Length: 132
Picture 1: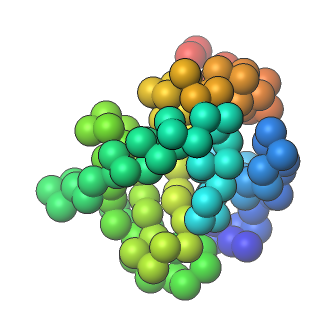
Picture 2 (picture 1 turned 30 degrees about the horizontal axis):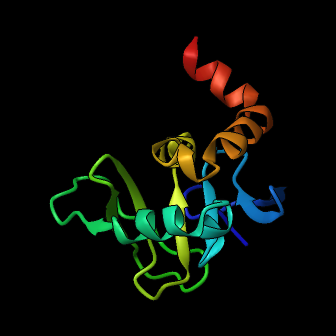
């Protein structure tokens, strides 16, 4: 699969038993439908987070294309805090660099703490560059 930003092939990585697609060039992460929920130990917390996704029609961020259907994705807010991209056909979610950590941090009670630790470990180089 190619990155919606760089159009370069993404790497398939396993995170807490879930395969994620990672773009080493942009630091973005693609999660197929259902994979975000699978990162949570608490199903109720996952459902609550997914139900919090609301379209943001006023976003000025450039729309990116779904790596599966190639249609422009919609910008959605997670709990009115983090802006991510969602395929309109339900193929999955795109997280720009650092956004997945932010989203999982919103729901640490759902097991996000363990997954956040794994993400930080996996992407330590990108996170360290951002903080410098």
